[in-house]
Length: 273
Ligand SMILES: Nc1ncnc2c1ncn2[C@@H]1O[C@H](COP(=O)(O)OP(=O)(O)O)[C@@H](O)[C@H]1O
Ligand SMILES: [Mg+2]
Image 1: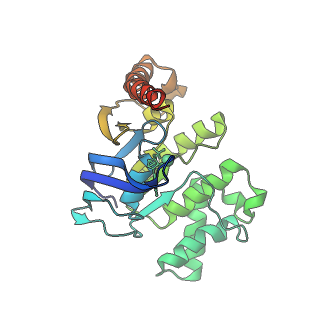
Image 2 (image 1 turned 90 degrees about the horizontal axis):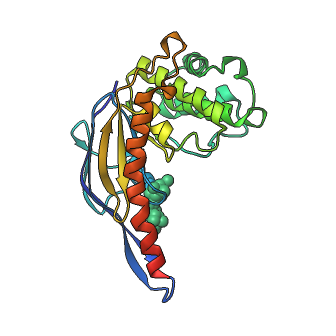
Image 3 (image 1 turned 90 degrees about the vertical axis):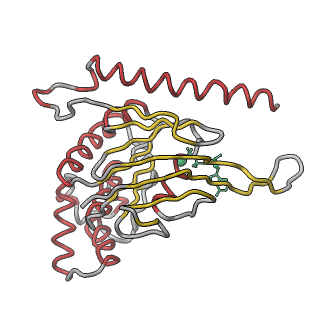
C-alpha cells in the first residue's frame, strides 16, 4: 500500500523570456537534486518561494519530465501520471456541480472496477474519515474552505493511492482549521501507511507533520539538508507537541537552515538592480 520514491541527480531547466531583450534563455530550476523517500514515510519539503518545490512534486506526479536525471517509484522509472499517486493542490479543485459525495465518487469512476453501490460506500467511508459524512449531499459552494479541502483530501485518499502528494494544501486556511487538518492527516497516514510528500512554506507545519523535513536551497534548487524529526504526535494526555521544547528546537534548526537560504538570494537580487 505504499511506495519508495527515488530522485537521483534530477535537473529541470525551463525556457524563459528575458526582461530586457525578450530573448529565450535557460532558467535552471533544479540541479543535481537527490532525494530518497522510504515506503510509508511522511516527508515534508520546505524552502523559499520559487526554489522549485512544486517542480519537484510535478515530477514525482509525472506531470512533467525532468531535463536530466531520473525518478523511480519502487524501482520503476516514472514516465507519467498514474493512479498509484494522487495530488492535492493548494487551490480547491472540486467540481462545483457535484455534491461532496459525488466529487469523491468521480475519482472512483475514473479508476474503474467498482460498482455504483461500491463507489458510494467507498466515498462515504472516506468522507467519514475526514469528518464530513453528514455533509455528503452538500455542493462545494455550501462548504467552507476547510471542508472543501477535506473533500479534496477524501477524494485523493478514496482510491487508495500508494503515494499522496500535497502541494501547500493548507495554505489558504485559517490557523485553527489548519492545525486540525494537520492532526487529521497524521491520523489518516498512521491508519493507511501511505507514503506522503507534503510541501509547505510553514516551518511549524513541516516540523509537526514530517518524520523528516527536507530543506531546499534555491538557485539552483536542490535538497540542502534533511532533518530527522522525532516527536510524539499522538496527542496523548492532551499534550500539545507544538508547545514542547523539542518542537521549538526542531523549529529553530529548520528556521536557521532557511535563513541561510534567504540571505544570499536577497543580496543577489539587490546586486541585479
Ligand atoms: N513552466 C515553467 N516555465 C518557466 N519557469 C518555471 C516554470 N515552472 C516553474 N518555473 C520557475 O521555476 C522556479 C521554481 O518554481 P516552483 O517549483 O513553482 O517554486 P516553488 O513551488 O518552490 O515556489 C521558479 O523560479 C519558477 O518561476
Ligand atoms: Mg509552489
